[in-house]
Image (tube, rainbow, N blue to C red; front, side):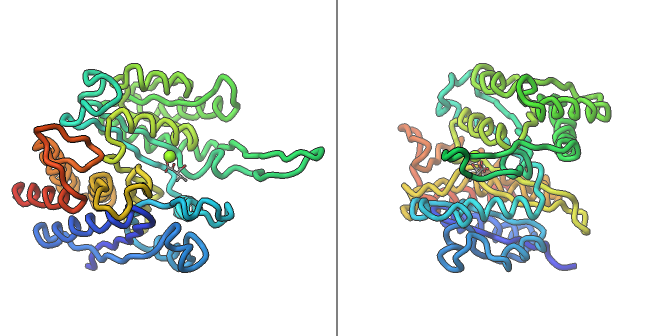
Length: 367
Ligand code: IPM
Ligand code: MG
């Protein structure tokens, strides 16, 4: 049988630096755990624009459709701010999500014990925090038609459309309920049913799907209240299911609660392929961080944890994923820190590659 295939798209800025570290981790699993992957690499975002004049070449799109999983670094940077909307780096990312039909975006917000002090909230509110946000990723106002900027009565009008079919709401809800079943069996659905018809439908459909998951405790919240509850008492949540735009905002909020935006991974999953694996793309939640690019300062953990999610969700290697996550937890507990995680007298400051050195050493020690 051939090895599972991985397409690596480092993208822009620190995406390239952190992805180089992920490759070292992938190599470690090949050498020490006999988990071999066929790895190929290509361009996305500004890097693709520089070479091809588009943020994602058709050939790259085709490759992404064929591989078992895509690992993406980050896209964007000030150099591309003035580009036409249609070729902005972000469009490459959105095309991948849409054409691969990656409808379920899993964004864990987990607070590592060693980092509870870095949260902007009191440590006791976040210590042990472990939330999973499931964001619908291929529909809603990000993609709804009509959209555009047009003239009306001599005035410019900007239009975007929030649109959800019940099938779209349902498949994401099933992904969220399935996850809840494997966790604390609590699901909170967030929308604005008080002002939006799409929110009313959202609430109805999630309630209908609940009939198939009676063991899960389901609650509904308006998304604005959800934002407030996330900063008031985040530990009340286990799995949150919400739409594309609310999910974008709420997941940034939840991520920052952990004090470690530079630490959080994500998985974007679609329907199963012929080999039974879901279509999948994994990426860190952080961006391309142009301010620290090329200085060896970036924290590679979010991207490495994204590979751990790939091990778990694409390759059925839950134990190896846990091995990698535990190695990272140990390194943090030992006080190893990249610059984003302010050091105190008990911590050791390391560079991007120094962090990976420490993680690989902890992996070796796990054998
Ligand atoms: C995210 C990002 C993207 C989004 C951008 C880069 C298009 O903010 O993944 O959360 O808005 O979805
Ligand atoms: Mg975002």
